Amino acid sequence: MNDVAAVQAKLNGQFKAGLSMLRQGTCISIDWVAGTALVNTPGGTITMPMAGGAPIPNARCWIGFLGNLPICLGAVARPPLATVAGTASGGLIAVTGDDGLPYQVTYTAGATFTSGDRVQVDWTSGGTIVAVPQADPNTGDPIADGGTVPSGGQQTRVFYPGDSGTWRDGTFASGWLGGELWDSDHNHGAYFYAGIADTIPDNASVQVFQVFMGTTGGYGGNPTVGGHALGGMGPDLSVSGARSFNPNQGWVDISDLFDSFKTGALLGVGTAGGGNWHFPPAGGNAGAINAVWST
Figure (spheres, helix red, strand yellow):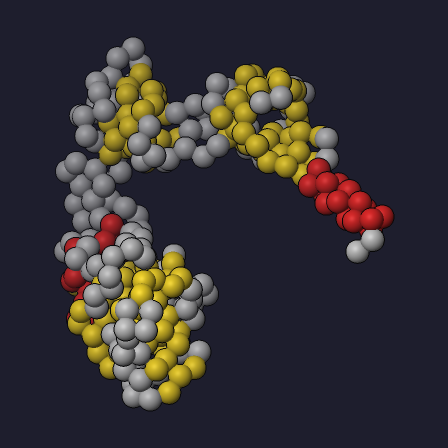
């Protein structure tokens, strides 16, 4: 590339970078008649039009820049569920959001709360308790003191891995290699998940529990898959409850591991040797766990 082309390429990159940008600021006030928000940003205090939901005064908001034009895109999301952390006083009550941060919110006159109650908060007006939910609408798991789980309900969830990799036992190489899963005598792969035990109620009974293991190639004897207790790549991989499966079958039944997953004793699935097979890295349907349970 000649000097002129190199300079032009650099200028093109700078131009593209300046077309849009996203940052956070603090909303100072809102002009409802003009449809604008006054926002304190790292570069100063700017009046800008609002798009979508309005920000919350004295709270963080998103600012998008279209070229040199700033637009307020709405409030930075706050958790809709919180835990009561104090007693009501002067129309306010202290709660701890599911983000771990303390907040002061309002509540309906006459409502009573006990420290530790789980509450649902509407943030559109700055923060108001709108309900004391008794159960998670998706899982039926109780999320408030005194909540009861509806009986006889059936729930279906698909859990997708957030990461994957292969553990090499040191015979030919040692340590973790991120990405695809290998399954051989000295290379065992794993899919890593988050939130399975938090989602499945402790009193759930398994109906379906299976993992999608689609090979990308290989040869030899059938591969095997079981459960592991790792939250991510780090310690050595140890796979328990492994079973052999046809590399062309796709979904593999692991329903016998359901109780260990719902309690958190197992956190993910991994291969345990057999032939020499490769499986795709986390993404798409790779490593998806299909779970159906009843309570």
